[in-house]
Length: 330
Image: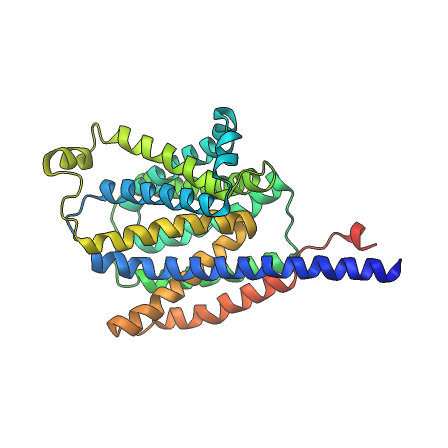
């Protein structure tokens, strides 16, 4: 009995090993994509390109990529055979609506806050994600993991200071800044944590695959965006100049990169969780600084150099000391 249980445990560990490697691969690829995206977009997207056309093209590319991956898995027919409108709205409708509201609040806040204040307040989404993950999924954090999250937020604040030190503050009365700046970004950060936790819940509890969630959320988001073009400046520009105004062949590169990033976000949320996605976002800022140094000759700031050991330490602590249920231990 002892030997058979040992061999079964070994077999289970061997089966789990490729999964861990896949998760590490997804996290690495997403970090690189997040880090490289700003530079790629800056080089290959012209100033007058219509933003809505880029977003809609990215969402369409996400859907195509997800369908291709489902075909490669051989599960496309099964997924659509089991698809229901109620299940789709439950799993993807609410997160999609929350993300749409979050983006609107961020746009309002960004116009009424200086970049540093905006960036620092926006980092609180890491804590909100941990909070809602615990509330919705019961996923607890150990005291050392909470320390790791605190270190990560400190690193994010340092990176935000480095990014924003050369940018001036915007004026305005304190009440106006509070109402149209601080409150919107705080609520948006809370909504980001909620939506990320709901996506994780849908994938892990409802067993909704990340590819199907990508298709559904892209479709819902695109419908909302198309509806907004009826009266938006971008909608008027598309009607006047055409959907592909100021596009070149190179514009396809950042669109496809963004689409692949969207697929990776779904995979990371499913297999690693929303909290670890926060580590990816902060780590990507360091990747961006490194790429700027390599390709533009712009050296990383002192703030970036101070943030690097904090990020590395926080990742190590978070991975090394997960929450352990004492009852299970006993």
